[in-house]
Image (tube, rainbow, N blue to C red):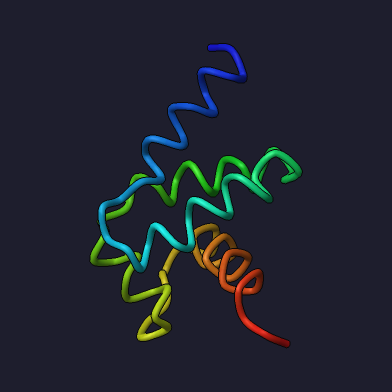
Length: 84
């Protein structure tokens, strides 16, 4: 699959229909995804396979994923939007 087709597929899957997720995932995809290491790109793709309700809990910091790979990508996304 070409890089452009893959990116469009990821964009489509990043649109979750839940505003709280869309405002995190879409800017991350557009601004950070292409610069990620391959392992982190794979983690992002794995994240998109998760249920919206699980992601909502993680991104609202009411819980954390058990999977260390998912925990890492959730933290990366949150670090981009939280003031330090």
